[in-house]
Image 1 (tube, rainbow, N blue to C red):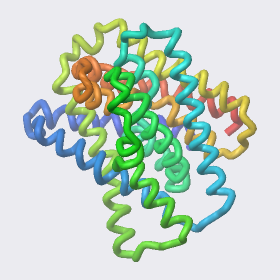
Image 2: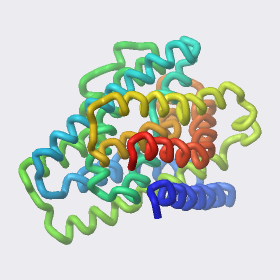
Image 3: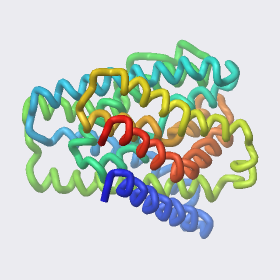
Amino acid sequence: MNVSGIILEQLGMMFLLILFGYLLAKKEILNTSGTQQIANMLTIYITPTILIMSFQQEYEREQLKGLFITMGVGFLLIASRIIVNQVSLKKEARIDHYAAVFSNSAFMGIPLVMAVLGYEGVFYMTAYMTATTLSQWTYGIYTLSGDRNLITPRRAFFNPATTGAIIGLLLYVLQIKLPFILSEALYTISNLNTPLAMILLGSYVARSKLRAVFLSYKAYWVSLLRLVILPVVGLGILWLLPIDDYLILMVLSIASCAPVAVNTALFSQIYGGDYEYGARLVILSTLLSIITMPLILMLSAFVFKF
């Protein structure tokens, strides 16, 4: 099966998991408190565990170089989205700006990269996620709140995702291999990411007014930016750069066309935005991504001759 086929298959599986989460929430087996607990598990424990385990491989100088290249290009792609948004979105549409810039690289990107490229691909995804996390806790928070005082080094560098990446990188550089039993347990915990993340998204769908989700014209424009326009711009930038590493190009392509980041809703609630609108953007873009992601990745396969 080719890459596009694998991705389409994975998206189909994710859709069924989202449906399962939807049914659990509708049956009130999974309540609001339960979804918050799942969100905390994913953010605080499971995502950092995945990042740590992705570094459990033999040290290679070229691989480490590729890691920093991926991080640098990640920042470049984020900067390009910010620039495009300046002319595509109204200045006061704070949530729209955040949603268009930041993709769901953790909950959607990691499972797809894992399925297509394995832990070696997740290794490079950690670099992109580090760039995303640093940007979310600086530019992202400022965009949603308008308050520069909320941007601190502690928020940027000492959050679960960045901490996991730093620990994993140290283990990688020092070539510290975790004991077999511990590593197997942590790999098992990592495998919880996809089902729990998709169940969480399904619960968001169940608690949203679907009519409002599908009738917001502005949400469609933001989704078009996040899922099609900005990824195509990103592919153009990648094509211009002197990168010939298949893994790096594939990881960045997947990360670029993922739907709106789940924490768009969470950060909107914390920093004074419209939480319900943020959740609708997450839901609409996630549903539409089942169509758009395979198409964008087929385009990237054509452009980069995968």
